[in-house]
Image (tube, rainbow, N blue to C red; front, top):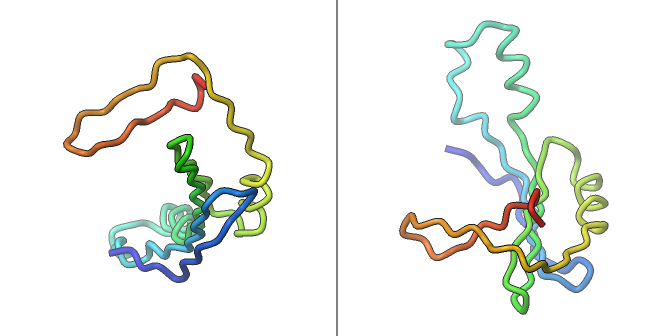
Length: 105
């Protein structure tokens, strides 16, 4: 499976933060891909994640991608969260969580 290369906890703009770098190379069998396809996959094998939590407002935001952690951190620093009156989307898959569609607010 995937392997965590690094995990770090901290704070960003007063919110709890977890930064993680994940290597997905172990989940692919390179032999089944042609060179062109593998070149595309290889660009996304290592991903960086920043999770921001606000326990008071009960939300979590994930900023992720193949960009370096510094770039993602700058993006995360500039996220502004506003609560709206729009109804939240609930998922009933046995887990207790709510997914707020960012396109809706």
